[in-house]
Length: 164
Length: 428
Ligand SMILES: NC(=O)C1=CN([C@@H]2O[C@H](COP(=O)(O)OP(=O)(O)OC[C@H]3O[C@@H](n4cnc5c(N)ncnc54)[C@H](O)[C@@H]3O)[C@@H](O)[C@H]2O)C=CC1
Ligand SMILES: Cc1cc2nc3c(=O)[nH]c(=O)nc-3n(C[C@H](O)[C@H](O)[C@H](O)COP(=O)(O)O)c2cc1C
Ligand code: SF4
Ligand code: FES
Image 1 (tube, rainbow over the protein chains, first blue to last red):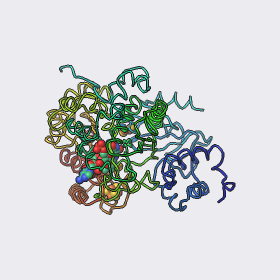
Image 2 (image 1 turned 90 degrees about the horizontal axis):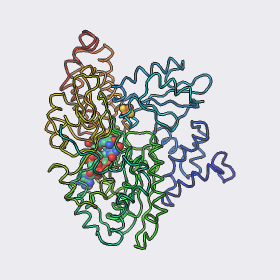
Image 3 (image 1 turned 120 degrees about the horizontal axis):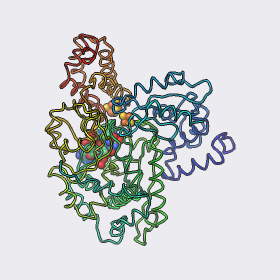
C-alpha cells in the first residue's frame, strides 16, 4: 500500500500512531500495534473491522493474521458495533461482594438490553468485565475512558442521564 | 489499637495538593537521589548493596528479593538493555499501583531512572493496563515534566548518561501482568507467557537483557536510597523490609489502600479499614489477591501482615490485596465467580490450564446452580491438583489455589448445595 491508499491512517490519525511508533526501536514498528488498533477503533466509533485491521497491518508491515491475533486476544478491542457509551461493569469478586449483580440486573432492565447488546437509539451498550483494579470503590464501572465507583441504583440513574 | 504509622513511602505525598506535580515532588526531596547518582556519588554497586540491605521483596506478588534480581544483570554487557515497570495490576482485589500512578508518579519515574542506571539500560517502558486512562495521563505528564526539567533524555545534566522513558498501554488481558507475557505484548504480539528459564535477565524484551519490577517496588527505591537500606529494613520484620500497601476491599466499612509497616497485625489493618461492615462478623479473608488461598476468620485474626506470618496461617502475601468476607458470604457463589475469571483469562497454550480452568468452572457452576453431584467435590480436588506445577506460568496455579482452599475450609457449603440445591443461608 502507498501512503495515499490509506483511508483511515492519514492526517491526524497517522500522526498519533507515528508518535507511538517513535517510542520503539526503529526496526520494531509492530510494537505499536496495540496503540494503533486503539486509535483506529476510536475513530471508527468504538469497533474494529477487517479493513481497519488490514490497514494497521499494512502500515506497520505486519501479516494481517498477526494483527487479527492481537485484535482478538485483548478484551478492549471490539468487533461488533457498541453503544456511544460502552458501559463496562466489573463483576469480579470485590464488586460481587458489594452487590454488583443487583446493579447489572437493574441496568439491563432500565436500558431494555442484555449484555453485549446496543440500545435502539445507539446510545448505550453493556459489557461485563473482569477486575478493573479499583476494588476499593466497588462496585465499579468504566464508561468510555472514565471510572465510576461506589455505584448504586440512584447514582446509575443520574449518570445515565448526564451522558448524552 | 496503638496508633499506626501510615504512608511512609510510596504514598508519602498523597495528602498534598497536586501531589502528582513535579514542583510538589521536588519540594519534598524528589530527584535528589537521581542527581547524586548522575554526579557519581552513588555507584551502581552501592545502590544494589543498599537495595539488598533494605530487604525489599518484589511487590508484584512473587516476593522475589529486588536487590538480588538487579545483581543478575551485567551493566557493562554491550548492546541495548531494558528496564520495565509492571503496572498491569489485574489481580482481583488489587488497586494499589493505580494510586501510585495517580498521586505520586514522579517517585516511580525516579525509581525507573535509577533502576535503569544500575542495570545499564538506556530505555524504560512502563506497561500500564489499558483501562487505566487517568493514571496513564498522570504518569505520562510526569514523564514530560521530567524531560522538560532535563532529568530525562540525552546526556542528562551533563553526566554523559542517556535515558528515555515511555509508556506502553495494554488493552485488557490479565495474563499480560505475567512478566514474559508482558514482554510479548510490548513486542506487538498476543500476551502468551514464555517458558522460564531463560529469565528476562538473560532473554527479555526484543531478546535483550531486561529487568522487570512492579510499580510499588520501583517507587520505593528513591526512598530507600534517600533514607538508607537500613531505615527501610527496620520499618518491617526480618523476613520482609519496609512498608507495604495493602488494598482492602469487600465487606469493610472503609475499603481503600493502606500503606503500613510489614508485620502489622491483620486485626489492626481491619480496624483501619473500619472493621467488618454493618456490624457483622468476619467469615473469611483472602490476604493477597484472588490467586492466594482463602483463610477462615480464626486463622486470619491471628496473623500479621508479612510473608512468614501469612504463610504460617496457610496463605500468601501476594500483592497485598486483602479481600474481606462477612458472615453472610456464599462461598460457592464467590468461587463460581473466581473460577470463571481464570477460565476466561487463561491464554490457552497449556492443556492442563486451558482444559482444567474450564472444567473447574463448569463443575463449580453446576454446584452453584443446584445441579451438583456428590462426586463433584473429589473431582474438583483432583483437577486442581493436576494443574499445579504442570504449566508454563503462574496463572495455572493461581486458578487451582482458590479451588483447593475454598474446599479445604468450606467444603460443607459445597456439600449443602449438592444435597439441597441451595446455599446454607437459603435454608435459615
Ligand atoms: N499484581 C498483580 O496484579 C498480580 C500478581 N500476581 C502474583 O504474581 C506471582 C507470580 O509471579 P511470577 O512472575 O510468575 O513468579 P516467579 O517466582 O516466577 O518470578 C518472580 C520474579 O523473580 C524473577 N526470578 C525468579 N527466579 C529467578 C532466577 N532464578 N533467576 C532470575 N530471575 C528470577 C522472575 O524473573 C520474576 O521477576 C504470584 O505469586 C501472584 O501473587 C499474580 C497475578 C496478578
Ligand atoms: C498471571 C500473572 C499475572 C501477574 N500480574 C502482575 C501484575 O499485574 N503486576 C505485577 O507487578 N506483577 C504481576 N505478576 C508477577 C510478574 O510476573 C513478576 O513477578 C513481577 O512483575 C516482578 O516484579 P517484582 O519483583 O517487583 O514483584 C503476575 C504474574 C502472573 C503469573
Ligand atoms: S498456565 Fe495457563 S495462562 Fe499460563 S501459559 Fe499456560 S495456558 Fe497460558
Ligand atoms: S473486583 Fe471489581 S474493580 Fe476489582
